[in-house]
Length: 528
Image (cartoon, rainbow, N blue to C red; front, side, top):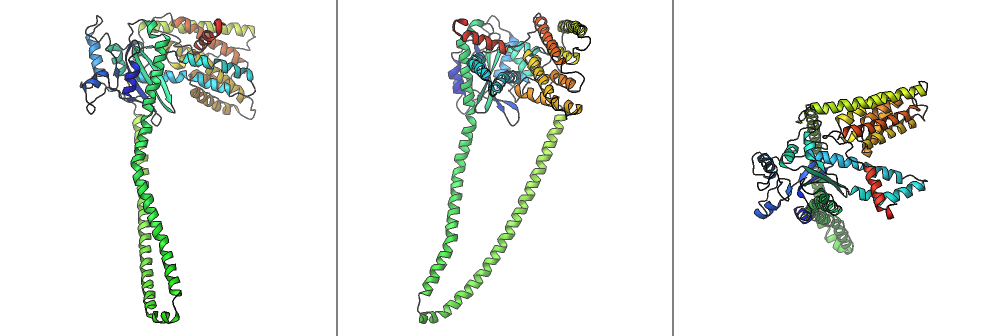
Protein backbone atom coordinates (compact mmCIF):
# COMPACT_ATOMS: atom_id res chain seq x y z
CA UNK A 1 0.00 0.00 0.00
CA UNK A 2 2.81 2.40 0.87
CA UNK A 3 4.57 1.78 -2.45
CA UNK A 4 1.32 2.40 -4.36
CA UNK A 5 0.75 5.66 -2.48
CA UNK A 6 4.30 6.89 -3.05
CA UNK A 7 4.21 6.14 -6.78
CA UNK A 8 0.76 7.66 -7.39
CA UNK A 9 0.80 10.83 -5.30
CA UNK A 10 4.10 12.45 -6.27
CA UNK A 11 2.54 14.17 -9.33
CA UNK A 12 -0.81 15.19 -7.82
CA UNK A 13 -1.05 18.98 -7.62
CA UNK A 14 -1.95 20.59 -4.30
CA UNK A 15 -1.95 17.38 -2.23
CA UNK A 16 -1.30 17.62 1.50
CA UNK A 17 -1.81 13.95 2.28
CA UNK A 18 -4.32 11.11 2.29
CA UNK A 19 -5.87 8.37 4.39
CA UNK A 20 -6.95 4.88 3.36
CA UNK A 21 -10.05 3.30 4.91
CA UNK A 22 -11.47 -0.12 4.12
CA UNK A 23 -15.05 -1.18 4.86
CA UNK A 24 -15.52 -4.33 6.94
CA UNK A 25 -18.70 -6.11 5.80
CA UNK A 26 -18.97 -8.21 8.97
CA UNK A 27 -18.94 -5.33 11.48
CA UNK A 28 -20.16 -2.50 9.24
CA UNK A 29 -17.22 -0.30 10.29
CA UNK A 30 -14.50 1.62 8.44
CA UNK A 31 -10.98 0.47 9.39
CA UNK A 32 -7.90 2.61 8.74
CA UNK A 33 -5.06 1.03 6.74
CA UNK A 34 -1.64 2.17 8.02
CA UNK A 35 0.68 3.95 5.58
CA UNK A 36 4.33 4.90 6.00
CA UNK A 37 4.90 8.61 5.28
CA UNK A 38 7.95 9.88 3.43
CA UNK A 39 9.70 10.93 6.63
CA UNK A 40 9.12 7.55 8.26
CA UNK A 41 10.26 5.77 5.08
CA UNK A 42 13.62 7.52 5.17
CA UNK A 43 14.29 7.60 8.92
CA UNK A 44 13.13 4.16 10.10
CA UNK A 45 14.22 0.67 9.32
CA UNK A 46 11.92 -2.00 8.01
CA UNK A 47 11.29 -3.49 11.45
CA UNK A 48 11.03 -0.11 13.23
CA UNK A 49 8.50 1.66 11.04
CA UNK A 50 5.55 3.26 12.79
CA UNK A 51 2.51 4.79 11.18
CA UNK A 52 0.04 7.43 12.25
CA UNK A 53 -2.56 6.14 9.81
CA UNK A 54 -2.12 9.20 7.59
CA UNK A 55 0.19 9.73 4.61
CA UNK A 56 1.70 13.23 4.56
CA UNK A 57 2.99 14.66 1.27
CA UNK A 58 3.80 18.06 2.69
CA UNK A 59 3.06 20.14 5.79
CA UNK A 60 0.04 22.43 5.75
CA UNK A 61 0.73 26.16 5.45
CA UNK A 62 -0.88 26.85 8.82
CA UNK A 63 1.47 24.32 10.49
CA UNK A 64 4.62 25.28 8.55
CA UNK A 65 6.86 27.64 10.57
CA UNK A 66 8.29 29.10 7.33
CA UNK A 67 4.85 30.07 6.03
CA UNK A 68 3.26 33.51 6.66
CA UNK A 69 0.03 31.70 7.62
CA UNK A 70 1.75 29.83 10.49
CA UNK A 71 -0.27 29.30 13.67
CA UNK A 72 1.00 27.56 16.79
CA UNK A 73 -2.41 25.94 17.38
CA UNK A 74 -2.34 24.50 13.88
CA UNK A 75 1.17 23.11 14.44
CA UNK A 76 0.07 21.42 17.66
CA UNK A 77 -2.99 19.89 15.96
CA UNK A 78 -0.84 18.76 13.01
CA UNK A 79 1.64 16.98 15.29
CA UNK A 80 -1.17 15.30 17.24
CA UNK A 81 -2.43 13.88 13.96
CA UNK A 82 0.88 12.83 12.41
CA UNK A 83 3.37 12.16 15.25
CA UNK A 84 2.69 8.78 16.90
CA UNK A 85 5.45 9.44 19.46
CA UNK A 86 3.37 12.08 21.23
CA UNK A 87 1.46 10.97 24.30
CA UNK A 88 -1.67 12.84 23.17
CA UNK A 89 -1.53 11.45 19.61
CA UNK A 90 -5.00 10.67 18.21
CA UNK A 91 -4.93 7.35 16.37
CA UNK A 92 -7.58 6.75 13.67
CA UNK A 93 -9.91 4.29 15.38
CA UNK A 94 -12.61 2.26 13.69
CA UNK A 95 -15.62 4.38 12.79
CA UNK A 96 -19.12 3.79 11.53
CA UNK A 97 -20.70 5.41 8.45
CA UNK A 98 -21.85 8.93 9.22
CA UNK A 99 -19.41 9.47 12.14
CA UNK A 100 -16.18 11.41 11.69
CA UNK A 101 -14.71 12.64 8.41
CA UNK A 102 -14.30 9.15 6.94
CA UNK A 103 -17.83 8.14 7.91
CA UNK A 104 -19.37 11.32 6.48
CA UNK A 105 -17.57 11.05 3.15
CA UNK A 106 -18.35 7.32 2.97
CA UNK A 107 -22.07 8.01 3.51
CA UNK A 108 -22.10 10.72 0.83
CA UNK A 109 -20.26 8.45 -1.62
CA UNK A 110 -22.69 5.60 -0.91
CA UNK A 111 -25.73 7.79 -1.57
CA UNK A 112 -24.23 9.05 -4.84
CA UNK A 113 -24.22 5.45 -6.16
CA UNK A 114 -28.03 5.41 -6.24
CA UNK A 115 -28.01 6.73 -9.82
CA UNK A 116 -26.19 3.56 -10.86
CA UNK A 117 -28.91 1.42 -9.26
CA UNK A 118 -31.65 3.41 -11.03
CA UNK A 119 -29.79 3.13 -14.33
CA UNK A 120 -29.39 -0.65 -13.94
CA UNK A 121 -33.08 -0.94 -13.09
CA UNK A 122 -34.06 0.96 -16.22
CA UNK A 123 -31.82 -1.24 -18.35
CA UNK A 124 -33.56 -4.35 -17.01
CA UNK A 125 -36.97 -3.25 -18.36
CA UNK A 126 -37.98 -5.43 -21.28
CA UNK A 127 -39.98 -4.37 -24.25
CA UNK A 128 -39.02 -0.68 -24.15
CA UNK A 129 -36.25 -0.22 -26.71
CA UNK A 130 -36.34 3.56 -26.49
CA UNK A 131 -35.32 3.48 -22.81
CA UNK A 132 -32.53 1.04 -23.61
CA UNK A 133 -31.19 3.29 -26.31
CA UNK A 134 -31.34 6.27 -24.00
CA UNK A 135 -29.48 4.49 -21.20
CA UNK A 136 -26.86 3.17 -23.61
CA UNK A 137 -26.26 6.71 -24.89
CA UNK A 138 -25.75 8.22 -21.45
CA UNK A 139 -23.74 5.28 -20.11
CA UNK A 140 -20.41 6.85 -20.98
CA UNK A 141 -21.55 10.31 -19.95
CA UNK A 142 -22.57 9.08 -16.53
CA UNK A 143 -19.17 7.47 -16.20
CA UNK A 144 -17.52 10.78 -17.04
CA UNK A 145 -19.74 12.64 -14.59
CA UNK A 146 -18.78 10.24 -11.80
CA UNK A 147 -15.15 11.25 -12.33
CA UNK A 148 -16.03 14.69 -10.95
CA UNK A 149 -14.46 15.12 -7.52
CA UNK A 150 -16.41 16.99 -4.84
CA UNK A 151 -14.10 18.81 -2.41
CA UNK A 152 -15.76 19.39 0.97
CA UNK A 153 -14.97 22.14 3.45
CA UNK A 154 -13.67 20.39 6.57
CA UNK A 155 -14.25 23.50 8.71
CA UNK A 156 -17.94 23.47 7.78
CA UNK A 157 -18.25 19.79 8.68
CA UNK A 158 -16.45 20.33 11.99
CA UNK A 159 -18.72 23.26 12.94
CA UNK A 160 -21.93 21.51 11.94
CA UNK A 161 -23.96 21.22 15.17
CA UNK A 162 -25.93 18.28 13.80
CA UNK A 163 -22.88 16.03 13.45
CA UNK A 164 -21.62 13.90 16.38
CA UNK A 165 -18.54 15.36 18.02
CA UNK A 166 -15.34 13.80 16.71
CA UNK A 167 -11.98 14.95 18.07
CA UNK A 168 -10.05 13.87 15.00
CA UNK A 169 -12.39 15.88 12.74
CA UNK A 170 -11.75 18.97 14.88
CA UNK A 171 -7.99 18.42 14.61
CA UNK A 172 -8.28 18.21 10.80
CA UNK A 173 -9.92 21.64 10.75
CA UNK A 174 -7.44 23.19 13.21
CA UNK A 175 -4.36 21.73 11.49
CA UNK A 176 -5.15 23.32 8.11
CA UNK A 177 -6.60 20.30 6.28
CA UNK A 178 -9.45 22.48 5.03
CA UNK A 179 -10.29 20.65 1.79
CA UNK A 180 -11.06 16.93 1.68
CA UNK A 181 -12.46 14.61 -0.97
CA UNK A 182 -13.50 10.99 -0.54
CA UNK A 183 -13.00 8.65 -3.52
CA UNK A 184 -14.60 5.22 -3.00
CA UNK A 185 -13.25 2.01 -4.51
CA UNK A 186 -14.81 -1.42 -5.06
CA UNK A 187 -12.34 -4.15 -6.09
CA UNK A 188 -14.27 -7.42 -6.54
CA UNK A 189 -16.36 -6.81 -3.42
CA UNK A 190 -13.58 -5.28 -1.32
CA UNK A 191 -14.84 -1.75 -0.64
CA UNK A 192 -13.36 1.31 0.99
CA UNK A 193 -12.62 5.00 0.54
CA UNK A 194 -9.49 7.10 -0.03
CA UNK A 195 -9.58 10.57 1.59
CA UNK A 196 -7.41 13.18 -0.17
CA UNK A 197 -6.49 16.43 1.62
CA UNK A 198 -5.74 19.39 -0.65
CA UNK A 199 -4.19 22.83 -0.20
CA UNK A 200 -7.01 25.43 -0.04
CA UNK A 201 -4.59 28.29 -0.83
CA UNK A 202 -3.61 27.06 -4.30
CA UNK A 203 -5.29 27.88 -7.59
CA UNK A 204 -8.60 26.00 -7.65
CA UNK A 205 -8.50 25.67 -11.43
CA UNK A 206 -5.31 23.61 -11.20
CA UNK A 207 -6.71 21.51 -8.36
CA UNK A 208 -9.98 20.80 -10.18
CA UNK A 209 -8.62 20.41 -13.70
CA UNK A 210 -9.42 17.22 -15.63
CA UNK A 211 -5.82 15.94 -15.57
CA UNK A 212 -5.49 16.27 -11.80
CA UNK A 213 -8.95 14.81 -11.18
CA UNK A 214 -8.32 11.79 -13.40
CA UNK A 215 -4.97 11.19 -11.71
CA UNK A 216 -6.66 11.22 -8.30
CA UNK A 217 -9.37 8.84 -9.54
CA UNK A 218 -6.90 6.32 -10.98
CA UNK A 219 -4.60 6.63 -7.94
CA UNK A 220 -7.48 5.83 -5.60
CA UNK A 221 -8.34 2.69 -7.58
CA UNK A 222 -4.71 1.51 -7.57
CA UNK A 223 -4.37 2.12 -3.83
CA UNK A 224 -7.69 0.36 -3.27
CA UNK A 225 -6.45 -2.65 -5.25
CA UNK A 226 -3.33 -2.75 -3.05
CA UNK A 227 -5.53 -2.81 0.05
CA UNK A 228 -7.90 -5.41 -1.41
CA UNK A 229 -5.09 -7.85 -2.26
CA UNK A 230 -4.17 -8.24 1.44
CA UNK A 231 -7.01 -10.67 2.17
CA UNK A 232 -6.22 -13.05 -0.75
CA UNK A 233 -2.53 -12.95 0.23
CA UNK A 234 -3.37 -13.88 3.80
CA UNK A 235 -5.60 -16.72 2.64
CA UNK A 236 -2.86 -17.98 0.30
CA UNK A 237 -0.30 -17.98 3.14
CA UNK A 238 -2.74 -19.84 5.38
CA UNK A 239 -3.42 -22.42 2.67
CA UNK A 240 0.34 -22.83 2.12
CA UNK A 241 0.90 -23.50 5.82
CA UNK A 242 -2.00 -25.98 6.04
CA UNK A 243 -1.07 -27.91 2.89
CA UNK A 244 1.72 -30.08 4.49
CA UNK A 245 -0.66 -31.15 7.26
CA UNK A 246 -3.33 -32.07 4.73
CA UNK A 247 -0.80 -34.01 2.63
CA UNK A 248 0.32 -35.98 5.70
CA UNK A 249 -3.29 -36.79 6.54
CA UNK A 250 -3.92 -38.06 3.03
CA UNK A 251 -0.75 -40.18 3.17
CA UNK A 252 -1.72 -41.64 6.54
CA UNK A 253 -5.21 -42.49 5.24
CA UNK A 254 -3.73 -44.25 2.22
CA UNK A 255 -1.31 -46.26 4.39
CA UNK A 256 -4.08 -47.31 6.78
CA UNK A 257 -6.33 -48.28 3.87
CA UNK A 258 -3.53 -50.32 2.32
CA UNK A 259 -2.90 -52.17 5.59
CA UNK A 260 -6.62 -52.73 6.10
CA UNK A 261 -7.22 -54.22 2.66
CA UNK A 262 -3.92 -56.16 2.65
CA UNK A 263 -4.97 -58.46 5.53
CA UNK A 264 -7.85 -60.25 3.64
CA UNK A 265 -5.52 -60.77 0.67
CA UNK A 266 -2.87 -62.36 2.87
CA UNK A 267 -5.47 -64.65 4.48
CA UNK A 268 -6.74 -65.71 1.06
CA UNK A 269 -3.21 -66.51 -0.10
CA UNK A 270 -2.59 -68.64 3.01
CA UNK A 271 -5.90 -70.45 2.44
CA UNK A 272 -5.04 -71.18 -1.19
CA UNK A 273 -1.61 -72.37 -0.16
CA UNK A 274 -3.06 -74.75 2.46
CA UNK A 275 -5.55 -76.20 -0.06
CA UNK A 276 -2.70 -77.02 -2.43
CA UNK A 277 -1.08 -79.41 0.11
CA UNK A 278 -1.52 -83.23 -0.12
CA UNK A 279 -3.78 -85.17 2.36
CA UNK A 280 -0.74 -86.64 4.09
CA UNK A 281 0.66 -83.21 4.70
CA UNK A 282 -2.73 -82.02 5.96
CA UNK A 283 -2.89 -84.82 8.55
CA UNK A 284 0.66 -84.13 9.61
CA UNK A 285 -0.15 -80.48 10.09
CA UNK A 286 -3.44 -81.06 11.96
CA UNK A 287 -1.77 -80.20 15.25
CA UNK A 288 -0.55 -76.89 13.84
CA UNK A 289 -3.99 -76.19 12.42
CA UNK A 290 -5.52 -76.68 15.87
CA UNK A 291 -3.04 -74.25 17.33
CA UNK A 292 -3.95 -71.76 14.64
CA UNK A 293 -7.65 -72.10 15.49
CA UNK A 294 -6.95 -71.53 19.17
CA UNK A 295 -4.84 -68.50 18.30
CA UNK A 296 -7.53 -67.10 15.98
CA UNK A 297 -10.19 -67.56 18.69
CA UNK A 298 -8.04 -65.76 21.24
CA UNK A 299 -7.23 -63.01 18.71
CA UNK A 300 -10.94 -62.61 17.87
CA UNK A 301 -11.74 -62.12 21.54
CA UNK A 302 -9.00 -59.56 21.84
CA UNK A 303 -10.28 -57.74 18.75
CA UNK A 304 -13.82 -57.70 20.19
CA UNK A 305 -12.47 -56.28 23.43
CA UNK A 306 -10.47 -53.62 21.55
CA UNK A 307 -13.50 -52.68 19.43
CA UNK A 308 -15.63 -52.33 22.53
CA UNK A 309 -12.94 -50.19 24.12
CA UNK A 310 -12.74 -48.00 20.99
CA UNK A 311 -16.54 -47.58 20.99
CA UNK A 312 -16.37 -46.44 24.60
CA UNK A 313 -13.65 -43.94 23.76
CA UNK A 314 -15.58 -42.62 20.75
CA UNK A 315 -18.75 -42.26 22.85
CA UNK A 316 -16.84 -40.38 25.53
CA UNK A 317 -15.25 -38.13 22.93
CA UNK A 318 -18.63 -37.37 21.31
CA UNK A 319 -20.11 -36.51 24.70
CA UNK A 320 -17.21 -34.15 25.39
CA UNK A 321 -17.60 -32.52 21.97
CA UNK A 322 -21.33 -32.01 22.53
CA UNK A 323 -20.69 -30.53 25.97
CA UNK A 324 -18.03 -28.22 24.51
CA UNK A 325 -20.38 -27.11 21.72
CA UNK A 326 -23.15 -26.38 24.23
CA UNK A 327 -20.75 -24.38 26.41
CA UNK A 328 -19.51 -22.43 23.38
CA UNK A 329 -23.09 -21.68 22.32
CA UNK A 330 -23.96 -20.51 25.83
CA UNK A 331 -20.84 -18.32 25.94
CA UNK A 332 -21.60 -16.82 22.52
CA UNK A 333 -25.21 -16.13 23.52
CA UNK A 334 -24.07 -14.55 26.77
CA UNK A 335 -21.48 -12.41 24.96
CA UNK A 336 -24.08 -11.26 22.43
CA UNK A 337 -26.47 -10.38 25.21
CA UNK A 338 -23.81 -8.38 27.07
CA UNK A 339 -22.92 -6.55 23.84
CA UNK A 340 -26.61 -5.75 23.28
CA UNK A 341 -26.90 -4.46 26.84
CA UNK A 342 -23.82 -2.23 26.42
CA UNK A 343 -25.29 -0.81 23.21
CA UNK A 344 -28.48 0.09 25.07
CA UNK A 345 -26.45 2.25 27.46
CA UNK A 346 -25.32 4.40 24.51
CA UNK A 347 -21.97 5.32 23.01
CA UNK A 348 -19.42 8.04 23.72
CA UNK A 349 -20.62 10.50 21.07
CA UNK A 350 -21.08 14.02 22.38
CA UNK A 351 -24.26 16.06 22.25
CA UNK A 352 -24.28 18.28 19.14
CA UNK A 353 -24.07 21.99 19.95
CA UNK A 354 -27.07 24.25 19.25
CA UNK A 355 -27.42 26.66 16.32
CA UNK A 356 -26.19 30.20 16.76
CA UNK A 357 -28.64 33.09 16.56
CA UNK A 358 -27.97 33.92 12.90
CA UNK A 359 -28.55 30.34 11.74
CA UNK A 360 -31.77 30.19 13.77
CA UNK A 361 -32.95 33.35 12.01
CA UNK A 362 -32.23 31.78 8.59
CA UNK A 363 -34.16 28.66 9.64
CA UNK A 364 -37.13 30.76 10.77
CA UNK A 365 -37.17 32.84 7.57
CA UNK A 366 -36.87 29.82 5.28
CA UNK A 367 -39.49 27.73 7.06
CA UNK A 368 -41.97 30.59 7.37
CA UNK A 369 -41.57 31.64 3.72
CA UNK A 370 -41.94 28.11 2.41
CA UNK A 371 -45.06 27.34 4.45
CA UNK A 372 -46.59 30.69 3.58
CA UNK A 373 -46.24 29.89 -0.11
CA UNK A 374 -47.59 26.36 0.43
CA UNK A 375 -50.56 27.65 2.44
CA UNK A 376 -51.42 30.18 -0.26
CA UNK A 377 -51.13 27.46 -2.89
CA UNK A 378 -53.37 25.20 -0.82
CA UNK A 379 -56.06 27.87 -0.62
CA UNK A 380 -55.90 28.46 -4.37
CA UNK A 381 -56.14 24.75 -5.20
CA UNK A 382 -59.01 24.22 -2.77
CA UNK A 383 -60.90 27.19 -4.24
CA UNK A 384 -60.49 25.98 -7.83
CA UNK A 385 -61.43 22.37 -6.99
CA UNK A 386 -64.38 23.25 -4.73
CA UNK A 387 -62.56 21.82 -1.69
CA UNK A 388 -61.89 18.39 -3.23
CA UNK A 389 -58.09 18.78 -3.53
CA UNK A 390 -55.77 19.96 -0.74
CA UNK A 391 -52.12 19.73 0.18
CA UNK A 392 -50.79 17.28 2.82
CA UNK A 393 -48.82 19.54 5.16
CA UNK A 394 -47.42 16.92 7.59
CA UNK A 395 -44.75 15.43 5.25
CA UNK A 396 -44.03 18.91 3.89
CA UNK A 397 -43.34 20.14 7.42
CA UNK A 398 -40.87 17.32 7.91
CA UNK A 399 -39.27 18.21 4.56
CA UNK A 400 -38.71 21.85 5.54
CA UNK A 401 -37.22 20.71 8.87
CA UNK A 402 -34.63 18.71 6.96
CA UNK A 403 -33.96 21.48 4.44
CA UNK A 404 -33.31 24.27 6.96
CA UNK A 405 -31.88 22.31 9.93
CA UNK A 406 -30.02 19.44 8.18
CA UNK A 407 -29.00 21.33 5.06
CA UNK A 408 -25.93 19.23 4.19
CA UNK A 409 -27.42 15.85 5.19
CA UNK A 410 -28.09 13.38 2.32
CA UNK A 411 -31.79 12.83 3.26
CA UNK A 412 -32.55 16.54 2.73
CA UNK A 413 -31.12 16.75 -0.82
CA UNK A 414 -33.53 17.37 -3.73
CA UNK A 415 -32.73 14.03 -5.37
CA UNK A 416 -33.70 12.12 -2.23
CA UNK A 417 -36.79 14.26 -1.62
CA UNK A 418 -38.21 13.96 -5.14
CA UNK A 419 -37.35 10.37 -6.07
CA UNK A 420 -38.32 8.91 -2.69
CA UNK A 421 -41.75 10.59 -2.86
CA UNK A 422 -42.26 9.22 -6.38
CA UNK A 423 -41.43 5.73 -5.11
CA UNK A 424 -43.82 6.26 -2.19
CA UNK A 425 -46.67 7.28 -4.51
CA UNK A 426 -46.02 4.35 -6.85
CA UNK A 427 -45.97 1.90 -3.92
CA UNK A 428 -49.27 3.12 -2.50
CA UNK A 429 -50.89 3.08 -5.95
CA UNK A 430 -49.70 -0.50 -6.46
CA UNK A 431 -51.16 -1.60 -3.12
CA UNK A 432 -54.53 -0.10 -4.03
CA UNK A 433 -54.65 -2.52 -6.97
CA UNK A 434 -55.25 -5.37 -4.50
CA UNK A 435 -58.84 -4.94 -3.21
CA UNK A 436 -58.40 -7.76 -0.68
CA UNK A 437 -55.96 -5.65 1.36
CA UNK A 438 -57.55 -3.78 4.24
CA UNK A 439 -56.54 -0.30 5.32
CA UNK A 440 -54.37 -1.54 8.18
CA UNK A 441 -52.62 -3.95 5.80
CA UNK A 442 -51.70 -1.10 3.45
CA UNK A 443 -50.66 1.12 6.36
CA UNK A 444 -48.18 -1.53 7.52
CA UNK A 445 -46.89 -2.56 4.09
CA UNK A 446 -46.51 0.86 2.45
CA UNK A 447 -43.87 2.43 4.79
CA UNK A 448 -42.00 -0.87 5.09
CA UNK A 449 -41.68 -1.22 1.32
CA UNK A 450 -40.81 2.46 0.79
CA UNK A 451 -38.15 2.53 3.51
CA UNK A 452 -36.54 -0.67 2.22
CA UNK A 453 -36.49 0.37 -1.44
CA UNK A 454 -35.17 3.87 -0.74
CA UNK A 455 -32.43 2.42 1.49
CA UNK A 456 -31.41 0.00 -1.26
CA UNK A 457 -31.29 2.78 -3.87
CA UNK A 458 -29.48 5.20 -1.53
CA UNK A 459 -32.22 7.87 -1.55
CA UNK A 460 -33.34 7.72 2.09
CA UNK A 461 -35.89 10.44 2.92
CA UNK A 462 -37.93 10.21 6.17
CA UNK A 463 -40.98 12.23 4.94
CA UNK A 464 -41.57 9.61 2.22
CA UNK A 465 -42.59 7.12 4.93
CA UNK A 466 -45.02 9.69 6.37
CA UNK A 467 -46.63 10.36 2.99
CA UNK A 468 -46.91 6.61 2.34
CA UNK A 469 -48.87 6.17 5.59
CA UNK A 470 -51.10 9.17 4.83
CA UNK A 471 -52.08 7.89 1.39
CA UNK A 472 -52.35 4.22 2.42
CA UNK A 473 -54.67 4.92 5.39
CA UNK A 474 -57.53 6.20 3.18
CA UNK A 475 -57.03 9.73 4.53
CA UNK A 476 -56.44 11.07 1.03
CA UNK A 477 -57.28 9.87 -2.44
CA UNK A 478 -55.06 8.98 -5.36
CA UNK A 479 -55.87 12.33 -6.99
CA UNK A 480 -54.03 14.15 -4.16
CA UNK A 481 -50.70 12.63 -5.20
CA UNK A 482 -50.03 15.05 -8.04
CA UNK A 483 -50.86 18.04 -5.85
CA UNK A 484 -48.52 16.74 -3.13
CA UNK A 485 -45.62 16.26 -5.58
CA UNK A 486 -46.17 19.84 -6.77
CA UNK A 487 -45.85 21.00 -3.16
CA UNK A 488 -42.59 19.07 -2.79
CA UNK A 489 -41.18 20.79 -5.89
CA UNK A 490 -42.18 24.20 -4.53
CA UNK A 491 -40.51 23.45 -1.17
CA UNK A 492 -37.30 22.36 -2.91
CA UNK A 493 -37.22 25.50 -5.07
CA UNK A 494 -37.75 27.78 -2.06
CA UNK A 495 -35.04 26.01 -0.05
CA UNK A 496 -32.53 26.36 -2.89
CA UNK A 497 -33.15 30.11 -3.07
CA UNK A 498 -33.12 30.89 0.67
CA UNK A 499 -30.39 28.55 1.94
CA UNK A 500 -27.81 29.78 -0.56
CA UNK A 501 -28.31 33.37 0.61
CA UNK A 502 -26.47 32.41 3.81
CA UNK A 503 -22.65 32.29 3.80
CA UNK A 504 -22.64 29.19 6.03
CA UNK A 505 -25.08 27.09 3.98
CA UNK A 506 -25.07 25.38 0.61
CA UNK A 507 -28.11 23.59 -0.78
CA UNK A 508 -27.96 21.23 -2.53
CA UNK A 509 -24.51 19.76 -2.00
CA UNK A 510 -24.49 18.26 -5.52
CA UNK A 511 -26.57 17.94 -8.69
CA UNK A 512 -25.95 14.43 -10.13
CA UNK A 513 -28.54 14.83 -12.90
CA UNK A 514 -27.19 18.21 -14.01
CA UNK A 515 -23.63 16.84 -14.07
CA UNK A 516 -24.79 13.94 -16.26
CA UNK A 517 -26.58 16.32 -18.65
CA UNK A 518 -23.54 18.62 -18.76
CA UNK A 519 -21.24 15.69 -19.50
CA UNK A 520 -23.61 14.53 -22.26
CA UNK A 521 -23.63 18.03 -23.75
CA UNK A 522 -19.83 18.29 -23.71
CA UNK A 523 -19.35 14.84 -25.24
CA UNK A 524 -21.76 15.44 -28.14
CA UNK A 525 -20.31 16.72 -31.46
CA UNK A 526 -20.48 20.52 -31.87
CA UNK A 527 -22.24 20.73 -28.49
CA UNK A 528 -25.55 19.44 -29.92
